[in-house]
Amino acid sequence: MNGSTPLRPHRAQFDHVSLAFDTAKGKLQVVEDVSYAIDDGDFVAVIGPSGCGKTTMMSMLAGFVKPTGGRVLFDGAPVKGPGPERGVIFQEYGVFPWLTVRQNIAFGLGLDANRVPPAERDAICDHYLALMGLADFANAYPKHLSGGMRQRLAIARAYAVKPQFLLMDEPFGALDAQTRSSMQNLLLQVLATENKTVMLITHSVEEAIYLASKIIVVTARPSRIKQIIEVPFPYPRDESIQERKEFGELRSVIRELVMSEYRNQQAQARPVSFSD
Ligand SMILES: Nc1ncnc2c1ncn2[C@@H]1O[C@H](COP(=O)(O)OP(=O)(O)OP(=O)(O)O)[C@@H](O)[C@H]1O
Image 1 (cartoon, protein in one colour):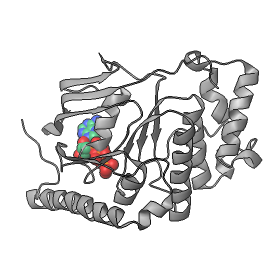
Image 2 (cartoon, rainbow, N blue to C red):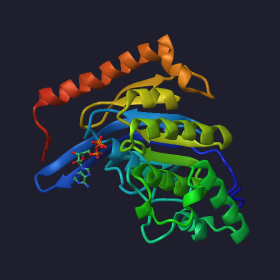
Image 3 (cartoon, helix red, strand yellow):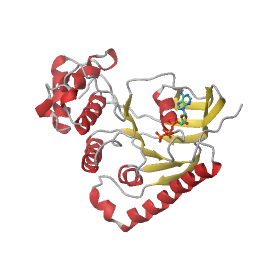
Image 4 (cartoon, protein in one colour):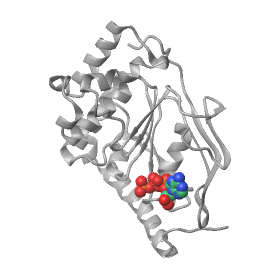
């Protein structure tokens, strides 16, 4: 629909990536020697203990922070900053309160990188208003929406500019169980109709297995790769896979991996570890 952005395969690569923040108390090592690739069409979920460095990892690929060691590559070149081919959706992120729902969705389509003619812009807005169940609220302001609707709007805004590469940080974390599950299904539906590559950060093992093709379990801080797991369920998927024995078995394995990192975090008994 967005004719200005030709579809082409994308590849992201973390190549021995490390990141340490300079803080008043010294260096805080947050990511350490992480290497993996996200290939075109992959759906990679990253899961690990709270505060271990997942958002920091994603922020490097989004171009918000730079690694202090190694390289983060997008299409073979080091990431230098944000770009229109990478759409970022954070929890509670990205809705302008002074714009209506329709204007919010149209916003990115007025920016140079994604500009489209008005008729096309209107068609894209209509498409996502319908897809996200927001058509009746097109002219409402975000303050009149429920939390779930606002988050759907944030997602619609990110989808509208058709980034082929989606970076999603706990996008459904604040939603009630019902809305969360309908948003997951909607995401699978969008992925089935549009070629997208996704990096998703989640705390939910079920969500990771249900949505992802590959799950990266990371360690307690500093984030290192603990295990990379290929999810054995083909797409398209529906909720019935959650009833399958293999789903339950995989859930147990991943839960144990994550819990063992929580135990490590507690055993370290240092909520924040600094070094000079
Ligand atoms: N700009 C910064 N300066 C200093 N420390 C930071 C900065 N950003 C993040 N941190 C610290 O880095 C660590 C990792 O944070 P990050 O948000 O990446 O973790 P996370 O795994 O995404 O956490 P959660 O799952 O709870 O969202 C935390 O201890 C955090 O306080």
